[in-house]
Length: 372
Image (tube, rainbow, N blue to C red):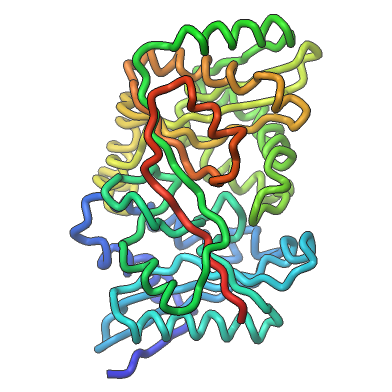
């Protein structure tokens, strides 16, 4: 039977767009479901300020009357202006293992991007680098962090079949802590004394609020040359602050200041919410928030969400200070494992940070590319 492709236009369509992944991963013990309401709002221009500089469309695939896949296409105009390129993005693609379904989804996304004047398609990528990005190609037997992605092994096989090539990979690590390594502790103390930096800690989310914009300004500066990154303006910063700030356990956030009390670096750890989100099953109510709140207060694993250091301090050992301070809190809670989010495989500056700790590199996500 022919595959029907339907553009997402109605509230029912948006709901179906989110729900289809719950069907695809229904019996998968590794997939971490999102909060449905947040996901729907991210697709709407009335909620997501990224639509000021992005054009986007979303589609559903039906077979025998049942939704069996989805795809989005995005043109980030700021990113294309920055590079002087005509690159479109495919986004949030999910599908059953069916050649006809996959072909129909990618055909509609590629055509729309080509009609918009794009000559290349990359993905999966979102509106910004803080959105969904990357397709899992290794590590299917590991549960991802709440900020990462999970896909089934056949996804990559279909991308190769469709003529997509690797653009760049993110790799992810699991770190194991058995007490603070003496070398790491000593290095952090030396940096503190030599550079005259101070560290600020927090106990309440409200204490973080005054620094929220500064954190993203550092992120803009530190990440500006990375793949798929565009600078976040005040509206985007406000959007992400409102979306994520209250989800943090503030004790796992550390800020570093120079001798003139200027913020120069930060690290954000988050008690792993992956198992709690699995129990929440896509909704905060009636019981989802209970599971999330319990995970925030009684962590077993910490997810390393974001680290930002102003470029001129990146070679001065500030990273050692950030990890020492975060590890100190982990020991207080009895946490012995940390999950990183995606790190570009060629980012040796960051990867070298793990050399003082027992670790494994267990997951890999890919950004694919194809000329259209």
